[in-house]
Amino acid sequence: MGILKNLIKNLNQFLSVNSIIEACCAYVLIVTAVYWVSEAVPLGAAALVPAFLYPLFGVLKSSEVAAEYCKDTTLLLMGVICLAASIEKWNLHKRIALRMVMIAGAKPGMLVLGFMCCTVFLSMWLSNTSTTAMVMPIAEAVLQQLISTGVADTQEDSETVEATEDGCLSGMTSPSLPAVNKTNGNTTNKPPLMIPLIHKEAGSMKTPSNQEYKHSDIPEPKKEKESKNSRYPTKRDHMICKCLSLSITYAATIGGLITITGTSTNLIFAEQFNNRYPDAKVINFGTWFIFSFPIAIIMLLLTWVWLHFLFLGCNFRETCSLSKKRKTRREMLSERKIHEEYIKLGPISYPEVVTGVFFILMTLLWFTREPGFVPGWTSLFEKKGYRTDATVSVLLGFLLFLIPARRPFSRAPRTPAGDSSAERDPDPMAPMITWKDFQNLMPWEIVILVGGGYALAAGCKVSGLSVWIGRQLEPMSGLPPWMVTLLACLLVSAVTEFASNPATLTVFLPILSALSETLQINPLHTLIPATMCVSFGVMLPVGNPPNAIVFSYGHVQISDMVKAGFGVNLIGVLVVMLAIMTWGVPLFNLTEYPDWAIARNFTGSL
Image (cartoon, rainbow, N blue to C red):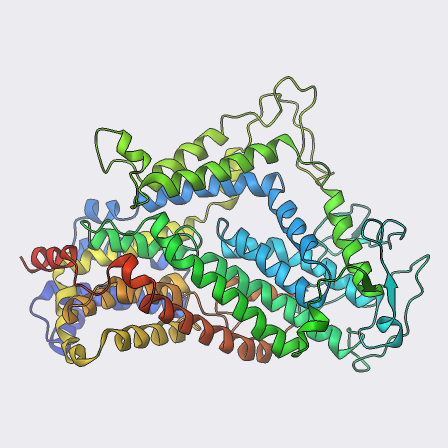
């Protein structure tokens, strides 16, 4: 204990803080940040450091720290996870993904764009990791068909087949595709949707590249190998695999920006902002969506163009043609494969309909709670300020535990579509989801991590450390607001390449808030861009879980991720800066220093 006191004393002298409490708080902040960045212990475990150090140092009472670990956003996340569990249990996400890809077509450029669109849409509501883990096997099945049934640059591939509008796929027989069990690699007779090409054994990547698929009516074209030991018929095939794989992880990141619940960093920002500025009623589901949706659309298109240029070249007319009258053999086979996977799902089921209705209802209630330009449905209640987005989320999530999964007056319960191994539940009143379904998806580590960030912010506020940090940043007062925002975006996007996104944002939010208050600029001018740019850790496999998932399939190398990710990172920073300097100004009134920030400065100085 004496060594610890000497450390605090030395830290106090080094930082020149006014009180020992500020030094203690700074010590806790530094220790937690080091654990987060180094990941010496799990992120959730590191987030518990303030829970025992703050009471020991006399910064906060134990009961006060504990209250910071469960906030409104925790309930919001729990309700969303209930809906996500229902979506995944009844395979609604697979139906949406396959339908959108079928609409896009099998041309390489349009196929990539179709996968990106469906990934962005799903990532708005599901976590980025879950979305990538779901979409990538679907893409892998298409890529396996691409590798095994044709060559991009041979004479046979350039031959076209006249296709009618209604029956170009009906007369072709299906190749036999043995399913591979991802757990043990054994071949089974079950035809699941997820057909992974790569699995991990003792840390090595193994691919069943020696599998051959015979066609009864379509001759196998003569393949020109990219190299002697390559698993890809041609270099162009390899480029298509790289482009499609990377597009999915980038699209998942872009989709997570659109909604408050799209990614954990958005939730961290919303709760920390509302905690620090309780009088600011500007951040809700509607305002965030209005600001971020154009960003996502612009980023989606520019990222698609960048990946197309990098891996497929500049011939957009050849790879993105929407004509359905002339198709190559490879395109027809790819379309047939996607169509077969969709047919496996069967007709839309009653649980899928219920889940879709709940999905639409939750979105509408979020949008119309306090839209801003018209009175929301909360104005119907006498007491104001009691109902939040979490109220809607938890209510609908709770109903999913009550509503039976069997259609009323039906004779037999319905199992999840495409899951032939699932046992039929004999209970006629079995609910849409069970507690086990919810528990399998609930990210408790993220909940504790977010709570640790709230605890750190509360300690900084009570001890006065945040005020001290603001005073140290006064030399930057000569910079214009856009320059401060740009520096913040570049800094967090660089740090998040090597540290986890939630940990990076949790460390930087209090610093940027204090900086904004010191410079007398609207805190949203720096906090919102920093929150979005912290998601742009896309250059390395360790940048975020979706990157690691895509990298594990073996189509891309680190050099490919760095090269493509640098362009996506640059696109993201520029688009976010464009947004905050244009439509973000009237939306959040960024030209004025708001009253709620002035009130916070006044109460913080008391």
